[in-house]
Length: 312
Image (cartoon, rainbow, N blue to C red; front, side, top):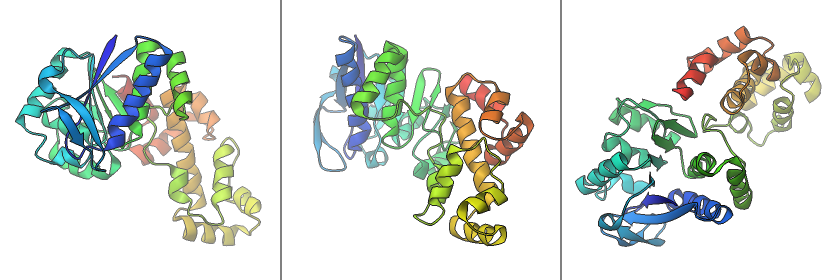
């Protein structure tokens, strides 16, 4: 049985802990004996989350041997609870555990403990600028849902902790159990770690007249999707359409289509064992070189480099 230790502290974010706990608990019911879950805090006893809801916990001294240490996030990561004793516990446990992980701003705790130096990691998008400034030795991948670098896993804000837990369950108990767990949670099985925290579609949609058009474009990326095609779909002249679309979404039609294609292509590269050339065709780029140029504009790296980075 694998023991999952979930580290909490005053003002932790409740869902950072509860989301992964629910995933591991359900997986343990599907595959009996899969997991034991232990909530941990420095002194033990009830610990109040930022919502005021409390969870009972065991003290560090009673943690026992852990297979996985998962550090929750929340406002408390910037409070006095993240003291020398907490960091020493994280460092000691990480040396003995099979893997160490964080949810959301729990990455701050791992970074302060020195566990992320020289490693790839992520955190909540709203914390990335501050995190990068405070921890320059960390190879921050600012918009990833979760990142695995060896035995250390980090995830983005709140619900991304469920994606991270599902990935761990898939590795431990098999994809069938992870899929059944996701079904019980009624969540998508499962967002790949490399998927962006941001959605190009959500960024461009604003409850306006082009929302349906953008959804249609995302579902038909293999089509040409020229300004002429989009304008005809919208029932407008090309000039009027281009001007109105840019005013409402903040993007030219061509740039909007490129963003949708890049997002879809990166998701495929993360989740499917496809050749770059096949991904370029599936997402409407037409050829790998055109997709490579789009990736460099969007991410500063070609597709092959991003794929190699994730495999490292």
